[in-house]
Image (cartoon, rainbow, N blue to C red; front, side, top):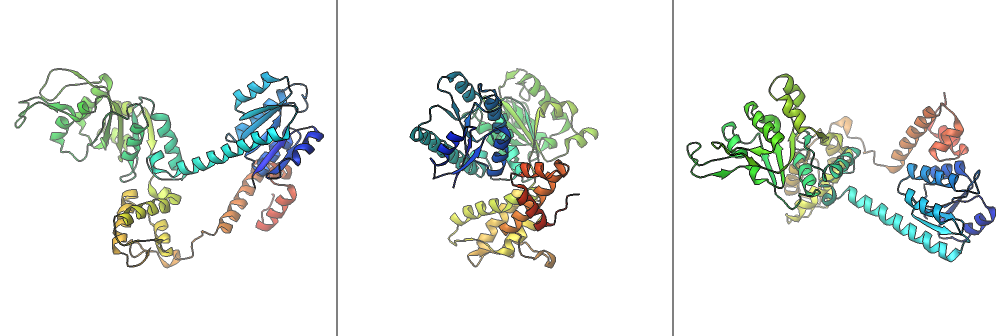
Length: 448
């Protein structure tokens, strides 16, 4: 049952609202302190807030302050402010501060019920949409619910509309090009070319002509004038993958291009203006390379106006199974042998493996396992992964165990933050003091 928090100091209106909404769990609060405690304890999706709260019942200052504090703690909560019948100015001010809707007294139960029901619909739709977006390949460019991946997603959303030069750092196989394509796709250049070039895959003597193009007769075999990758990206995005492997002499020419946004083809004298957004990536330690004089310091600072750290797969343990199931679904669609999932030993093995090849390694292992498996479930043997005897204990996927461990950690941290004050600890955790004492006894947590 969804929870509705009613913040109202008038006992008569409290009683009226208490029985108007049997479809919701209605929680009452009469002032700022009890409202914030109730917010922490019950985590409601919708709040009704009377702006005329004590100690400033005649005005709306206290109510507006409570509104801002609630939204700071829970930005997605839907707040319906209730005002006097002639207080339109404060109602509009509350909307400007982030309130979902407003209603003016006197209270009509039926009308207010419609507003509250609509707020719950919006809150539930937003929650469902956020859940889908977090694990959506289409929304983020890659799959993952871990905090590290969500931070990368937030950075992509901020960077995409801008022209800032971005450097993506991460091990091989972590999906650096996927991030670059996501930045391009979400930006204003999305309908223009996305040109990627891997600086490590092209021989050193060919890389310059590949990037800048060449004039006819510039060298043996140059039978016609040819535009380079940079020129082909005009109007769009240029992705320089593994820029740490770019030859040192060529780095000076790339730096000039980044600064001036003009190029000269090999064998040419004409300056050609090029309008591109630059994204670079590398698995190398560029700072160490600068110390060793194998990467130009001025180029490093030019390409790293903003840096994205793409985490390795081993640091995204909660994403490993999500990715594995996605790759399994992909591979099963291309294979007549239908696999339904992974065995317990396969799950253990995937969670314990270090994944030096990151996502690319996981994808390849799942693909080959679909071909090699003789049953409906992929095993650790199919994945060519193994677990030691010490690691072959049952998986700690029991929700009760996970919840109890989380509760114990939360109580310990809250006690530390409040210097052992039991009332404040209970308020932070959103529980009553008797519940706090009971949980401390259960988990043998001492208040020292």
